[in-house]
Figure 1 (spheres, rainbow, N blue to C red):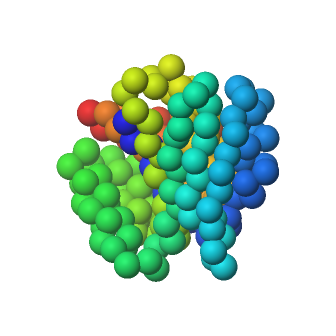
Figure 2: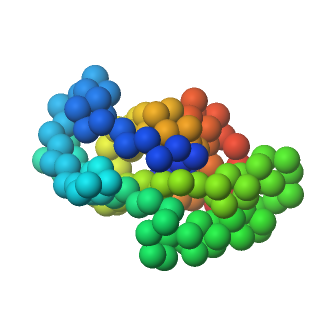
Length: 146
């Protein structure tokens, strides 16, 4: 299962703050890898399962094309005011996070959603969950996507 966080801000969430938020729910260890532009990958270990979190800046090669694909995808989900706002949001995204969870780790969905909400709150973002749709940082569903 994939989770994606589309962020209007380029603020890099602090690894320690991110782990602290997750550790409020369950013991999580994190290994963050980065460069001069901040961290770009984190391996989050919870309940002996590793969740891969990656961070992409919109100016990186191929990321803008991916964001345009998401904007086009939203056109197929309906035509309400939230759809238009989200299409614009995809185009204006400054950074994108992706989180992968294996199907065998479905019990970690609450941790994944909490991470999405934390990242969305921290970076003025919205998040998407495969098969469910797009959500505001507070968890309110904006667009259904099945």
